[in-house]
Image 1 (cartoon, rainbow, N blue to C red):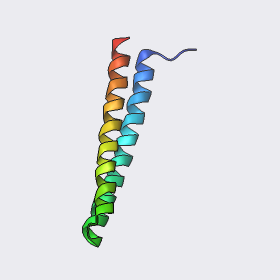
Image 2 (image 1 turned 90 degrees about the horizontal axis):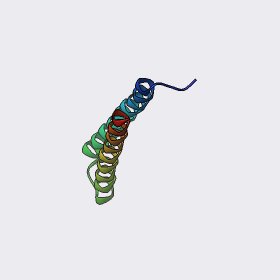
Image 3 (image 1 turned 180 degrees about the horizontal axis):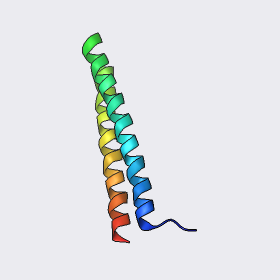
Image 4 (image 1 turned 180 degrees about the vertical axis):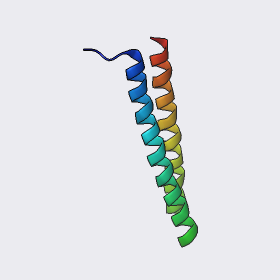
Amino acid sequence: MALTKEEIRGAVQDHADTDKTTHEGLLAAVVAYNEENGSTPEREKLQKELEKHVKKTDDGHNELLALIDEI
């Protein structure tokens, strides 16, 4: 039996929420590490790349949810 539109959307939303929680925790850990251990160019780069990844992932999930809403 096929999933309903609502079930598909719910699964994507659950995945997005899990990713967001994981990414926010990881980003917070990197920020705290940098604050406690001093910032270096490499650490700053890691933090910035992680911030971009979080945004890109959030945007991608939002695009998927919008596409599901259109069907």
